[in-house]
Length: 345
Ligand SMILES: *Cc1c(COP(=O)(O)O)cnc(C)c1O
Image (cartoon, rainbow, N blue to C red):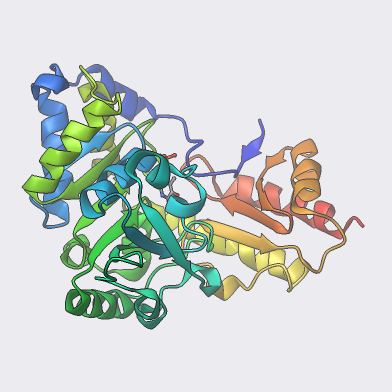
C-alpha cells in the first residue's frame, strides 16, 4: 500500500464514521427538514460563538458564500498572495461575485496586521476601487500549515473596525490551529464576521464544510447556495460524518502535528536548506527545493515510484501533509524513501 501524504483529504472514513452515517436521522434539507444537518449547523456556529451556519459540500463554496455576503460586485477583498481563496478557487470570487482582489505578500503566509492595513483603501470614491473586506487563512495551507498569531488577528480586527472593513476567516484547518496554539474556538470566533471550516481535511469526514456568521448573512448564503446548485436533500448522512468527526477526531490532530515535526526533523537532517523544522507547527511540511538540482515534480515522481505520494505545488515547492491514516511505522518508511530520493542527483 502506498503512503499517501499529498493531502489530509485522502483519508478513508472509519468504521465508526460509516456506522454514524448509516444510522443518521435525515430529512429533505432544502425544506430545512434534516435534523442532522440542522444540529451540525447550530453546533459549529455555537462552537465559535456565531448565530447560525450553513452546510456546504466544499470549503471553496463555504468561502465563496461568505465573501459574497461581505463584498459587493466591483468592490475589493484583500487576501494573502498564496491564500486558498486567491490561488485555489479558480477565480470564483471574480466569476461568481464580481469581487476584485488585491494581495499582500508574507513569509510562510504569516499574518502581520500592518501589512494588510497598509493596503486597505476603503471608501475610495468614484474613481478607485473600495476595499470592503479582508480574508485571513488559519492555518495557512501553502504557507506550510502556519498558525496565525492571535495578537495579530486582534490587532487586524481593531484596525479593520476603524476603517469599517469586514473580516473573513478561511478556517479550513482552524482545528489544527486550535490544537497547536491552545486558543479557543470562541476566541477565534470573536474577531471575524464570517468563518468557513472544513470537516473533510484533518477531521476525516468524506465531504462537508460549514459557513458560519450572523443569521442575516447565513440566510443570504442559503439562497446563494441553492442558486449555485448546492441545495442538497437527505444530506444528514454527510452531516453525521461531520458530527462524528467533531466528537472523535479533533484531539487526535496533535498526533498529525507530532508526525509532521518528525518528518521535518528527519528531512532537515538530510539537507538543512529543505526545511526549518521550527516552522512546522501543524500537519503540513513544505519543502523548499531551490538549492536542489531537481524539481518538485521530479522529487514527487521519485518518491511515488518508491511508494510515497507527495504533492508538487510549484517548480521548487513540494508538500507533505500528515493525517489520521498515517502512523509512526509509515513515517519511518517515508523517511527512508525520502533519504534515497533526496540524495540522488
Ligand atoms: C482545502 C481548503 C479549502 C477548501 O477546499 P475544498 O476542496 O473546496 O473543500 C479552503 N481553504 C483552505 C486553506 C484549504 O486548505
